Image (cartoon, rainbow, N blue to C red; front, side, top):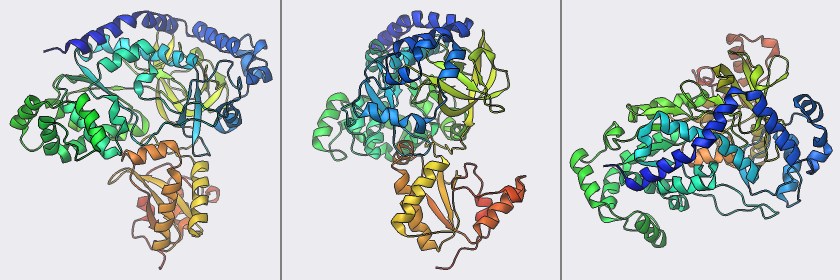
Length: 548
């Protein structure tokens, strides 16, 4: 049986997206023209901003003028301007007022904010609405049931900047225009109130309770695949309790009575569904979770670079469900979206895009890219980021009409990004310095490196006795939790705690490892962060720890 309200909401969205889809397809056929119009719109709209006056936006008539007058920047370069806007100073980066600011990670600092205007939200919508239209056209089954969109995890409280600007959007639906947000929420399988749960475990429990009550679940949108794997692990652990609460209603033992009352109103007991699940599967859920949600047609998530490692666990639990890569959507802006068959296509109807050739630093326009080539992305958006270097690398896989298809291949700044944590060497250096000051542990060698087993985590290889090494790792983990993305991955369980490994002769071991990897020994300088995995082979194969 098809759920009427979700079907009506989904079909209304599909019909409402046709105009945006047609505009996007026109842009795909003339990306240079579409990009030129976007650049002119952004320049004209912000000519009276302080940044616009400084760089003479009024004299920018084309891409060459823009590149000559406006410098390439990273977050650290633009941060003083963002700080002034956050403090309430008007018309700093944009002439329009800011609606809110979204937390992200910077290259060398811990907590960063990205400004959002109404026009920037419109630019996101110019990509997300055509994607949604294409999704329904290619997978009609997603319109016949409810959807689960990832929801802001617990722990984020109402917050504002010193100037009174709200911090943070609610959930993924905020990437769509207001009418679509209302329709999306009509088709949600999981109510937004789960985000006020007191901790991640409770949030997962309530999410699973809602999902079990939605046998018509047809679509899941998450970010890292490990998010869904951890959710399914909790399903295995809590299966019996979940069926009890699904049958009789949440009894309040797991959450405070006030929240339990709200949950029961939003998620009433479903005794019939509970009895059916208990009769079919007994005391544990099936390995193939498609048997629980037979209408589940598509899972949307990251599939490129580091996220590809996490796909296997998710696919094992949903072997028959189609997986669609999200493309490259960052806090700062959207670079590509899934559209048609093949790799995601550049979002040429949203922001002004430039692609930096790593061989010579030359900035290329979107229609000048070589198939097979790799480039670093720079964005210009209506949120006040101009020629902003994302530090993301993409490879051109082909074209749709005249617009490149591209995939994310990694970071240009040697960041480590197993689960979305985006650690960079300057950030780790800053946090390690603070940890050293806190603990008093001064090591001649200290290097953080990713490890994938038994769960994704970081290992701190440090020349210090084991107790000191453990204390330094604990302090470093605490310092890094000040970085938004790292804290989020840790709170969700997508990253485990930092593990200390006490070593002797760290520089010598590192030099030998680099020589094996083809580097000249004389050119090796041990980094604070080594983003490539596999260092346990060198440091933990018969390691010789320092004496306590």
